[in-house]
Length: 253
Image (cartoon, rainbow, N blue to C red; front, side, top):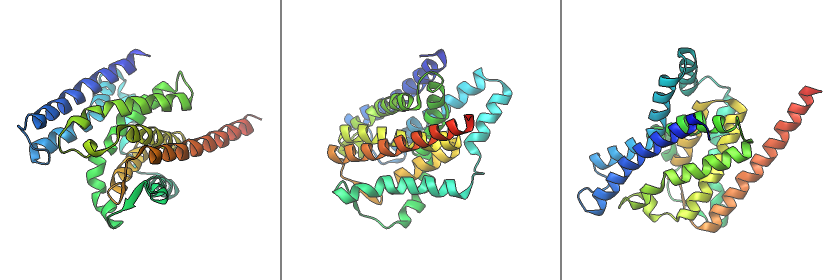
């Protein structure tokens, strides 16, 4: 694993885990109640460290042109409407599908997802600046999209681990194996979006809508449901890869 990746993972994990670990300790000792302003600030701060660390590292170790191009990709909303429909539709399907097999229930109206979107961009979406904006494409310089996605999915899952020790957090009520399978599933769906568009912005939007739709279609977090979601994402990714490779071969002929 290259120095760039080791550097990014060290700073991201160290910063996030110190912040989230402190929050977990405070709640465990009953010094802080999850849900108040200070706890939410620490929670969000830990969540945006992949973005902060990558932007800082990019500025420190890249040329001005590379840094400018990276930031432009992060904040560039200029994409065909069809890709917005695809990204948002894919997020909707990923969250709605489990309702078909008892893995989720619709507990809130759809408009809640739109109302929550700005919050979820900060509380989730911005992570993609680090994960899909840096880690995925860097890993793909050495490994296939499939292998790179699996690696990112596992790292992404492990990174969330301290949240299960914060008393009052949503994660405390989640089955960790369900979360692991779901994180892998979402990693494959995000790879489809990123490989198709090379857009960090669209990955941010997808991630934010996933978090928002989860408050509409509340997941039951059982392992079987997570496995079905993972298999669905894997099937979609396989179809996408077959199509992408066949298109590439046609262009080469």
